[in-house]
Image 1 (cartoon, helix red, strand yellow):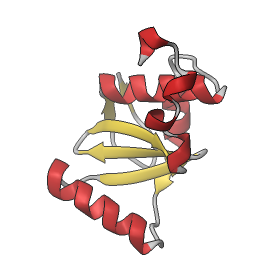
Image 2: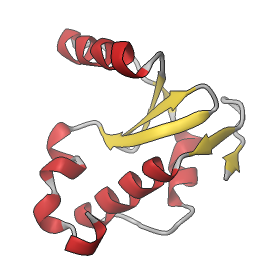
Image 3: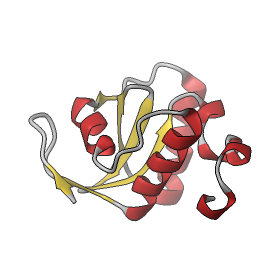
Length: 109
């Protein structure tokens, strides 16, 4: 689904990004409606990364996966490559999927 916003051009959410958003939202007890990801993304602004260790980790990610832009809203980080939101993660690492496996139903991991 394409989402247009005033601040960003149209973007497409990959299946992976949607799944990550829904699984993590469910595990954290947040809203999990199918259109919630678009609502949050519309509020997102470019991330200003001040922490040097976070900046370095995102730089390493760009070497492996290519150049990306990062947008944040409501505790979420949206990773945008070209016109696609390729993944969505929580800004606080302990709130991300790999740390929440015990709280996600086995059929959805």
